[in-house]
View 1 (cartoon, protein in one colour):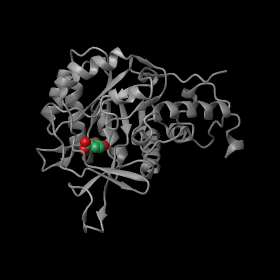
View 2 (spheres, helix red, strand yellow):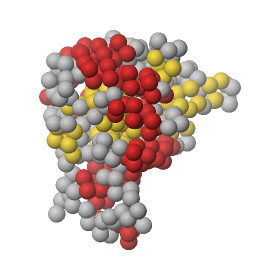
View 3 (cartoon, rainbow, N blue to C red):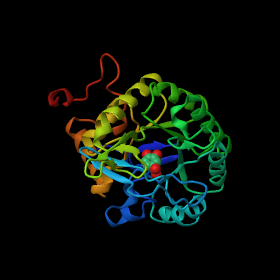
View 4 (spheres, rainbow, N blue to C red):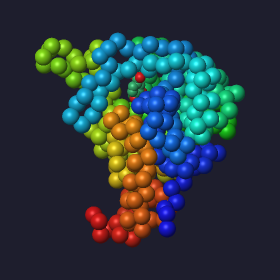
Length: 320
Ligand code: DHB
């Protein structure tokens, strides 16, 4: 019996809970050389800003032993080009589309949400809160419960009511549950956990920072245990809030771990950079993992690691 891998995102039925995470595949075009994007759960766009944006000076990428450091600086074509060019193309390929939005002021986030009001075919919006707030000395929105809540409330107020909104949070905080709570109280329908951790590398050869912007965002396997912890904590506090679990997922077993912690869906990001078919492979491997432990429906494993007596599916105890 095949495992039922379907997931639900607002009004959209997804063939898989495995999504292409924001930032590692642009607007999805390049992926089609490798996979059928109609079979991926959804494609989350690289975060879109109100205007075209050139991003940061180079070098913007630095490899570390188990993670990637980047300071791309939200390079992108802007919301108008995305809506005119990328969104119709993604829909013509049969993809479900989650639009990630990024702003430097609350007004910009609101403007982005308003621009999405007439857009047809947007399955959800992901609000990237890991952006510098131009009105608060560049302090990142996601690091402050008040600023995060204000952005979420502004987006909710301007977004069509039938489009679910996920707030993407930073793990660089003392209390991720407090930020999650502020976002949920301000109208977030779900949460994406987690964005990059801030990191830095110095090149001993030049004795200078490896990135032009000095520090950047760390992603990849190095941050996966942090993502598992954040998903776990937020699921404990808000068991009914859907979570897109993102952070260093490379295999089906990684995806299974995050779902057991409480993720309802999984984002695959950095893994796509060296394996552009990673979303399809992770989904296949997750299905194989579930079949091996006798689980019929992927939805049945969400949050199963919680509680004093978790319902251990047939075979799982044997394997651990
Ligand atoms: C960028 C923004 C992010 O939120 C992120 O996680 C990685 C990179 C950027 O600078 O473009």
